[in-house]
View 1 (cartoon, rainbow, N blue to C red):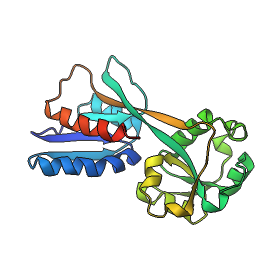
View 2 (tube, rainbow, N blue to C red):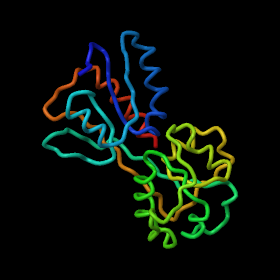
View 3 (cartoon, one colour):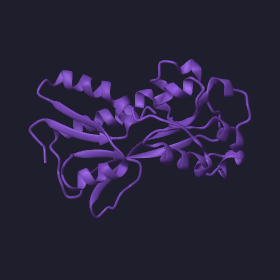
View 4 (cartoon, one colour):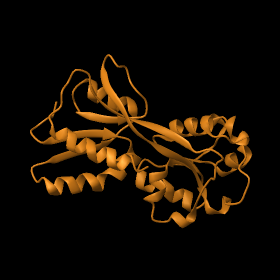
Length: 212
């Protein structure tokens, strides 16, 4: 376990980590003795780290076992279906998405399952993810939208990933009848009391995530 005085270890999804990085750095500038370890990871890895004491707090997308964890909902993110700009104005059907192909990433299956289940688009709601051909795979969050911008496929990501992409004009974010959201929960180990300095970090998380 790596917990030293004023070292705060926090783990979350890649898109969320990207949004929180600058605000947390600003907080570190204000408190020079503060060292923040920010890491992107999938849900289960986050929960395993919290349960075993390797990390202090994490942000996951569902409320975990209350017997092992303390959790509270701190906000939600909007999920977006992102396509090349050339798809703007076209009716989105399962066949059209199959023709476009998927740009995969570590959270792609999770995001797509949630998106297609919750979207109010009859032509997409019954789409089987397993039927979608993979056009490419990118592991680095900052690069996932690059092949989409070049017309090589589509993907599903939180809106924050679109907003941080420098070539937004090359993308088309599908317009939906009903937005799709993913809930976010702040998780710590049950019965473990964290130092008061964590409240400062929590306030940063709330201020950024609450602005979604």
